[in-house]
Length: 126
Figure 1 (cartoon, helix red, strand yellow):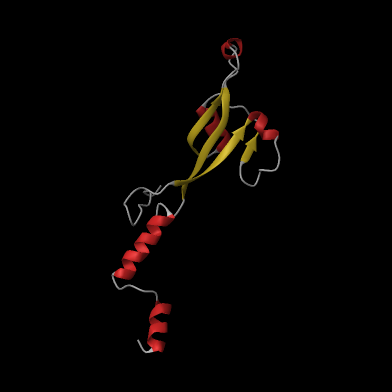
Figure 2 (cartoon, rainbow, N blue to C red; figure 1 turned 90 degrees about the horizontal axis):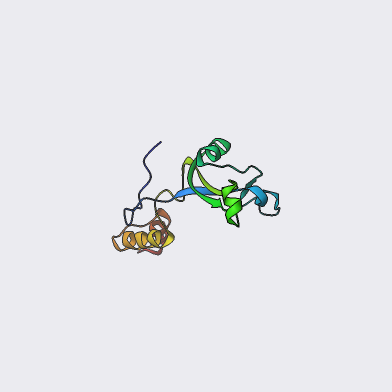
């Protein structure tokens, strides 16, 4: 696994591109399967969820029994996991759009320009 990319503007690590996976009753809901992944399983540990997903788990959210008896009976399970494929990041160069824009302004103030701009200036005689 390569090192995480750093923002070219502020130097912070760029966020991982993750996907939310829901377990249990939520798995029967329809209409959001293009945004989220639903699984009918109810993993009882992070390791079990890891085996089901075959991706690195970044975080998990647990369901808790509504009353003391349910908790004592061991009905706790993971309802959501956030998974990462081990290589995708939200961007290659910047941690957010504002930093990309600020970097572009700094480059423009420093005299840098894209070839299309240079060609247009040349055609205008400037």
